[in-house]
Image 1 (cartoon, helix red, strand yellow):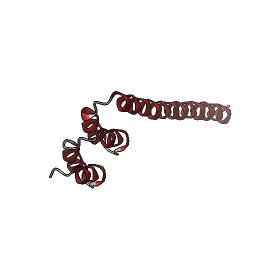
Image 2 (tube, rainbow, N blue to C red; image 1 turned 135 degrees about the horizontal axis):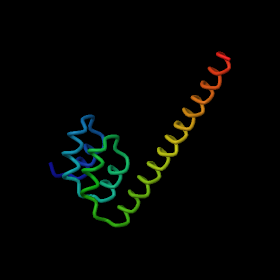
Image 3 (tube, rainbow, N blue to C red; image 1 turned 60 degrees about the vertical axis):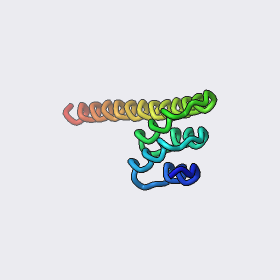
Image 4 (cartoon, rainbow, N blue to C red; image 1 turned 45 degrees about the horizontal axis):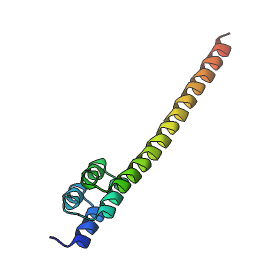
Amino acid sequence: MTDQNELADIAENAYDPDIRKSAVKKVTDQKQLADIAKNDSYSSVRKKALESVTDQKLLADIAKKRFRVEGSQNSGTKTRQQSFRDHGTRAHSFAGRRSG
Protein backbone atom coordinates (compact mmCIF):
# COMPACT_ATOMS: atom_id res chain seq x y z
CA MET A 1 0.00 0.00 0.00
CA THR A 2 1.40 3.37 -0.98
CA ASP A 3 -1.57 5.75 -0.75
CA GLN A 4 -0.50 8.24 1.93
CA ASN A 5 -4.05 9.13 2.97
CA GLU A 6 -4.93 5.49 3.55
CA LEU A 7 -1.68 4.86 5.41
CA ALA A 8 -2.24 7.89 7.62
CA ASP A 9 -5.79 6.74 8.35
CA ILE A 10 -4.53 3.30 9.37
CA ALA A 11 -1.68 4.81 11.39
CA GLU A 12 -4.12 6.98 13.32
CA ASN A 13 -7.17 4.75 13.62
CA ALA A 14 -6.30 1.05 13.49
CA TYR A 15 -7.34 -0.76 16.67
CA ASP A 16 -4.10 -2.75 16.97
CA PRO A 17 -1.07 -0.65 17.94
CA ASP A 18 1.27 -2.97 16.02
CA ILE A 19 -0.69 -2.27 12.84
CA ARG A 20 -0.52 1.47 13.59
CA LYS A 21 3.27 1.20 14.02
CA SER A 22 3.62 -0.64 10.71
CA ALA A 23 1.60 2.03 8.95
CA VAL A 24 3.54 4.85 10.65
CA LYS A 25 6.76 3.49 9.13
CA LYS A 26 5.34 4.23 5.66
CA VAL A 27 3.76 7.64 6.35
CA THR A 28 5.79 10.50 4.91
CA ASP A 29 3.63 13.52 5.76
CA GLN A 30 5.45 15.36 8.54
CA LYS A 31 2.31 16.95 10.03
CA GLN A 32 0.54 13.60 10.23
CA LEU A 33 3.60 12.00 11.82
CA ALA A 34 3.84 14.84 14.34
CA ASP A 35 0.15 14.47 15.19
CA ILE A 36 0.61 10.76 15.81
CA ALA A 37 3.78 11.42 17.84
CA LYS A 38 1.84 13.80 20.07
CA ASN A 39 -1.46 12.03 20.42
CA ASP A 40 -1.34 8.26 20.01
CA SER A 41 -2.41 6.37 23.10
CA TYR A 42 0.57 3.97 22.89
CA SER A 43 4.08 5.22 23.57
CA SER A 44 5.59 2.72 21.10
CA VAL A 45 3.48 4.18 18.28
CA ARG A 46 4.33 7.75 19.35
CA LYS A 47 8.03 6.84 19.39
CA LYS A 48 7.90 5.24 15.95
CA ALA A 49 6.23 8.36 14.54
CA LEU A 50 8.70 10.64 16.31
CA GLU A 51 11.63 8.77 14.73
CA SER A 52 10.38 9.86 11.29
CA VAL A 53 9.74 13.54 12.07
CA THR A 54 12.51 15.70 10.64
CA ASP A 55 10.80 19.11 10.56
CA GLN A 56 12.42 21.18 13.33
CA LYS A 57 9.33 23.28 14.07
CA LEU A 58 7.20 20.16 14.44
CA LEU A 59 9.82 18.54 16.68
CA ALA A 60 9.83 21.64 18.88
CA ASP A 61 6.03 21.53 19.07
CA ILE A 62 6.12 17.85 20.07
CA ALA A 63 8.71 18.59 22.75
CA LYS A 64 6.62 21.44 24.16
CA LYS A 65 3.53 19.26 24.35
CA ARG A 66 5.41 16.41 26.06
CA PHE A 67 6.90 18.86 28.56
CA ARG A 68 3.46 20.29 29.37
CA VAL A 69 1.96 16.82 29.78
CA GLU A 70 4.81 15.49 31.91
CA GLY A 71 4.91 18.69 33.94
CA SER A 72 1.21 18.50 34.71
CA GLN A 73 1.52 14.81 35.60
CA ASN A 74 4.42 15.53 37.92
CA SER A 75 2.54 18.32 39.66
CA GLY A 76 -0.43 15.99 40.06
CA THR A 77 1.82 13.33 41.55
CA LYS A 78 3.24 15.83 43.96
CA THR A 79 -0.24 16.82 45.02
CA ARG A 80 -1.20 13.18 45.61
CA GLN A 81 1.99 12.59 47.56
CA GLN A 82 1.36 15.67 49.66
CA SER A 83 -2.21 14.55 50.23
CA PHE A 84 -0.96 11.14 51.36
CA ARG A 85 1.50 12.74 53.77
CA ASP A 86 -1.24 14.98 55.14
CA HIS A 87 -3.57 12.01 55.53
CA GLY A 88 -0.86 10.05 57.33
CA THR A 89 -0.23 12.98 59.68
CA ARG A 90 -3.93 13.23 60.51
CA ALA A 91 -4.18 9.49 61.08
CA HIS A 92 -1.15 9.58 63.35
CA SER A 93 -2.61 12.50 65.33
CA PHE A 94 -5.93 10.71 65.63
CA ALA A 95 -4.26 7.49 66.80
CA GLY A 96 -2.32 9.45 69.43
CA ARG A 97 -5.54 10.97 70.81
CA ARG A 98 -7.29 7.60 71.01
CA SER A 99 -4.51 5.99 73.01
CA GLY A 100 -3.99 8.95 75.28
